[in-house]
Amino acid sequence: MVDGRLEQIVSAIGPRRVVVISDRYPPDAAGGAELSLHILLREDPLRDQALVVTFDKAIALPERRLVDGVEIVALPMSAAWPLHRLSQHEVDRLKRLSEGVKWRKFIGEALALGVRRPRIHGPALALWIAGPPAGGIRMAHATVPEGRGQPELRTILHQVRPELVHADNARSIMMAADILADDDTPLVALVRDHRFTSLQFDQSLTPPPGAAGLSLRGRLAMTCAKAALAYRQARLKRATVVIATSQHVTDTLAPVLGDGRLRRLPLEPVELPGHSLAVVGRDAFSILVVGSLTHNKGQFQLLRAWPEIVSRIPNATMDFAGRGPAHQAMQAFVKQQGLQSRVRMHGHLGSEALQKLYRDCDVVALPTLWSEPFGRVPLEAGAAGRPVVAYGSGGLVETVLDGVTGRLIERGDRTAFVTALADLAGDPEARERMGEAGRARVVEAYAPMRLAKLLASVWDEVGGRPDRRTAAHG
Image 1 (cartoon, rainbow, N blue to C red):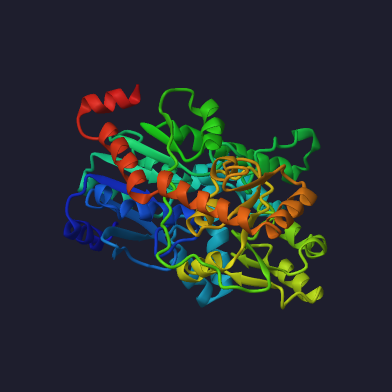
Image 2 (cartoon, rainbow, N blue to C red; image 1 turned 90 degrees about the vertical axis):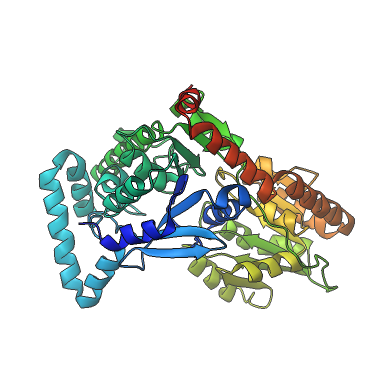
């Protein structure tokens, strides 16, 4: 039974024209997606229209929050398969009681799901027994409709009765589409990554290997991944309008949707820092790398190029801002090579600390090895007046203008990447010119109010009168 506390919270907030569903939301923000959404929603055209519904793994009961004037209902986050009918808070409590209690619940739930829906959960159960692949088992086609938060979401939508629902990012889109499957409420789906087009956990767009080259474990993993991708794509087709944040994401989604619902709107607003952008005179040439520390992001590859970098830029230093699976290996490399005085691993940073790194660096490096869906970091660098050197792939070809706001290098060409850094190290005038161009571009194209008005126009188009809904469906 849904807790009456939720109904009281929603009643106290009052009516809202739009319910916005987001996997996470500030102050619980893992990356740029949640930050971008909040910067949009706190602007006047959107703030008073929206009620944000998000999920928090640390809470046991629904909570009401207010951040910068944005009304938020936080729901307990569902745990991972096969405990997805429980909240993560409940699973953490089971772990504290006894590891054996948690595993008994895990096995019991897995077996019950396998008996109840063998075609759905059977392959995942077999894969779990065989040994799950890195990242876990892709079970979104089952975990979304069965998830612990679905009844609470239905309660909120039934009570608010919004003109439209806006779902931001993949899991929220799936949840919203599932709930609205038999409802004519319009759905705006904002897609920021490759989860609707990639079978891989790392969202790589490389074709998967053929079944003939896979082990039994690999074939089971592919069965789960294909079922999950088919589910995601089917739910995306429920949307009235699908917004992609870059031309790259738009191009990847076009074969999936195949109609006029798809729009490219770069809804990635960037705030201009209020402090001085001047760099205090120093002897070092500071290279800043921002982003989750993963293989896809290429930070470790750049770090391994340290001998090449320092041979071209003797006074170079490097700062890595972010955390992720590669953090430990990178930190060990820094220690092994004795680079602690010149290479600093900062981990995850708050906004003020990150802004200080942008302000104090000479250039921002993005050695991204995959097709980045958008690429927010170059815009943050531009807001701080700093040039960018990046591999030219995915959305980065839109957020870095080669020769104008930075340099784009052929993906994987480490020598050319180091050369571009060295060229900028020796040309302070070019750094200043590119930094100013980057800042001007952020002001012109990525200002929060401008993008909030764009999203408000989409909401106006698909919400409200029935004739608008019909037109939006095309």
